[in-house]
Amino acid sequence: MRNLSASVLDQSAPVHLQRIEPGRNMARFYSMEVERDLFGRVVLVRRWGRLGTAGRTRLDEYKGEGEALAALKALHGAKMRRGYRHQYSR
Image (cartoon, rainbow, N blue to C red; front, side, top):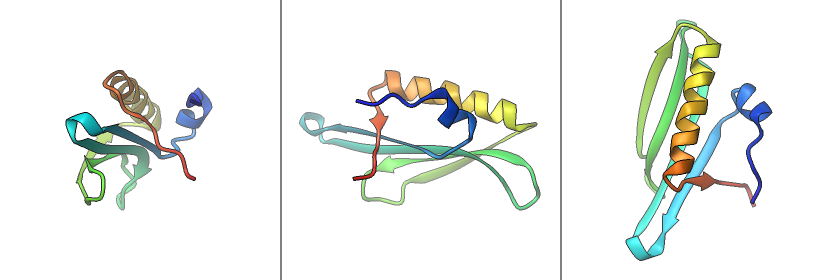
């Protein structure tokens, strides 16, 4: 399994994670990225839910890109500890 390098997170590229456990009937996704909204504010966009659904979306505003990227990295680590893994294109 490949590791997501810190350089990818620093570039605020979208991060797509999945957690699939057939024995528990679990098939979830979690994605996050740092963007600017229509008013120029820096936001961390998080989307999550069951695979195959639209899921939910949450926007968290930050003062700057550095703070938003730090939050993304912390959230990424927490999700990896909970069993989520990177989704790769086939």
